[in-house]
Amino acid sequence: MLWRRERRRRDWKRGFKLLWILGISFVTFLILGIPIAFVLGLTSFVALLYSGTIPLLLMPKEMFSGTDSFPLLAVPFFILAGNLMNAGGITKRLINFCNILLGYVRGGLALVNVVASMFFAGITGAAVADTSALGSILIPAMTEENYDRDFSAAVTAASSTVGPIIPPSIPMVILGTVGELSIGALFLAGVIPGIMVGLSLLGVSYIISRRRNYPKGRIKTIKEFFFGLKDAILALLMPGIIMGGILGGIFTPTEAAVVAVVYALLVSFLIYREIRWRDLHKILVDSIVTTSIIMLVIANSAIFGWILANQQVPQAFAHIFLSISNNKWVILLLINIFLLFVGTFMETTASLIILTPILLPLAVKVGIDPIHFGLVMVLNLVIGLITPPLGVCLFIACSIAKITLEQIVKAILPFLIAVIAVLFIVTYIPQLSLWIPQMIIK
Image (cartoon, rainbow, N blue to C red; front, side, top):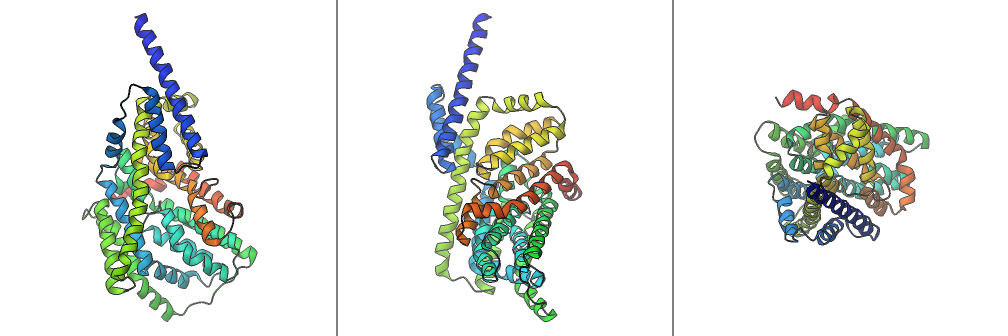
């Protein structure tokens, strides 16, 4: 009896030291500026070396298992679809159509930026792609029209947060895979919150534009409207085809990503004719590089997550949160604060893979709907993309606008406050995210 108790005490102390090694290594590698994918792998390697009892062969096994998933095939195809859109003129036509709709309003180009992001979100589901694709067109256009550079960059980065919320969404594909949740239901859960985020950003953009007296364009004629609609209709149909096929049971979310690629390829090659065969090499290489980075993050996150699970970190987290309160609304508040903090320094994909097995069981235990919690989790971590010091979308927008990080951080604060307000509204009114899934998926 005493021998067993002593053994448990030694195991607990060793596990505690292993977690300290894991945490210190993680923070150290981050401070050194090592990319997050390698941080996760190196940290796991150090932890396994320290343990001495876990074979290093576990690393390649878990890395392979983490990426060996059919739903994850949707990720490279949605990335490729977005790159085909950019090169094939689909993105440009979406922006032109949005300009026809809103260009005549004070600060019209800022509003166009947000609405174009909402349309773009319905095709690729990637915030970084949104920032780079739309920003490369709209930030120079806004600067030319005498919009402040920091404002132009801020509205571009902020509007990109809509991308992973409005379906389809790459983070939701990853969340659904890791958490074993319905990806279709997660997609549907993002519709209303995504629109709410877009509307809140439109409101902030309009108020700032009025105060600074930003320019407005002329009202377009009915002829111009129908010409723009005709030019953009194929791009506007794409989200409907993707979601309609998933909900109609015609294809899975993974197959929907393939359909998106084929559709973008046909439209760009045969109808718009803005892509040539020689352009495909660069498009494919760019897509492969982006996919490789994401898959490396997923693979290294898998072994990192295994170590946390092996050391019973999910149970420890649950104990800590439940020791504070058993009330699900208080738990949601604590988790929101925690995820907003994590989002400031952790990449979205890595955070989802590591934290979903920890937080999702806790949420279900206190009576939170898993689909609602999944949506809240994605929205929290997406906000991290525009939160200093390591918001990826901030860096992309800064490089396009040629401004400093300090300038964009100050300019993005009103947008950040608006998105966080939507986050808490969605958190405490679950039906905003659950109504459509419950209505459509019986």
